[in-house]
Amino acid sequence: MQDDVILRISNLSRSFGPVKALRGIDFELRKGEIHAIAGENGAGKSTLMNVIDGILQPDSGEIVLDGKPVKISSPTMAQKLGIGFVHQEIALCPDVSVAENIFMAKTNVSRSWLMDYKKLEREAVDVFRQLSDIDPSVLVKNLSISNQQLVEIAKALTLDCRILILDEPTAALTETEAQTLFGIMRKLADQGISIIYISHRMVEIFDNCDRVSVFRDGQHIVTNNVADILPSDVVNAMVGRVIDNLYPEKQEAPSDEVTLDVRNLTEATRFRDVNFTLKKGEILGIAGLIGAGRSEIVKGICQLEGDVTGQVWLNGEELKLRNYQDSIAKGMVYLSEDRKGDGVFLDLPIAANVSALKLEQVANGIGLIQSGTEEAQAEALGRKLNLKCGSLNDPVSSLSGGNQQKVALAKMLSVNPRLIFLDEPTRGVDVGAKSEIHRILRELANDGVGIVVISSELPELIGVCDRVLVVREGRISGQVTGDEMTEENIMHLASVMDAQASVA
Picture (cartoon, rainbow, N blue to C red):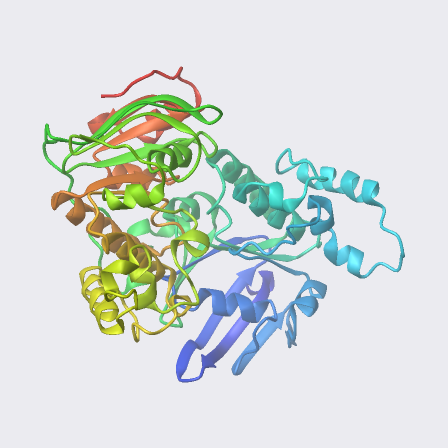
């Protein structure tokens, strides 16, 4: 099998000051294989990929490509060597077209003074034929996040790469788009292209990858054929301990007491006649394909966007909300799916993020922030959420994805909410942090806080929620609970069934 190795990394190390991000890493990638990389946030996965792509230089160690030692000094050199990297964070030019983004590298080396836009668009159509029906003339800023991710993938496919690195590529994709991507990955592998696939989702790794390597604390722990191990083996290797249950125990019998009652909620263009209740102590899930109206319904309830009509009762009180500030004042808050865009302020200190939703709680009588009060609030909530950080004055950008999400959740808890809507609460979060967040949500529900979870990960909804509503084309098409809560039933309601007007 050694003749099949296209990339070999030996004893590679990289430090950032006193922090050792990579410690003597050994890794091999074979020709035509899909090789998963698993590990918690901070395990060293992204650092190693940035070294392979020439973004970072190693302190020591060797990289061998096609049997020859190489020094990858820049991403441009990586591309010339046949290495393509699709980053988790979208890095497109929003004010130019899809076609221009896809062929930007090709255009940069062109000697032509004029750009043939029609030719670019025709070539882009050929690229997208295997991905999605996206108009190549549209400006990138007008695309959804999921379609922008597909543009990133299409861009990499035009580079004639021999090694393709995909970092959490399905985080913003619908299930249909994800399945299309997996089919493309297998076709590429059959053509001899080697794929490094980074994901926190065990089902994706075990359904689509040939081998999996686990990293922990900057070290390579183990590599196995996925056919020879179980998902639990990977999870336990990632965290360095046995996680017996990724999801906390559910509520045995739902309460009759209603926390949230939504009736006839309608917004002219995005959802209509939405009716449902949330019982005290239960965690309610909301499922549906991307674009079905899941987030829009929740934002409408909180008066975050849209011209919404209908009635909303919270703990028996009918709410008359004018804006989101009114929603916060009544104890109803929304945690955005876009953690870095809307959930936290990356460049601000942790303590300042926690207090940001209601500054008057940490201000004196003349409106000046009291740093001692602010830090005390952040420390108490951080302790409750098991937040791991150096100092509360450190910027949120210094934290792992899981701890960033805990800061965002602490910001919600700072206003003592009666109800929290959580949109994709564990997107981009490693399995250890996911387990902690799920435990925290169950504890909050047990303490009487209303919890509504929107998620594209069906195993998460099934594992953490007591009941799941399914949204299709702006209406609730049904609900599942108990033994009926299966991926097949949820997908059937999301894509097939006729919507019905109300759900008890």
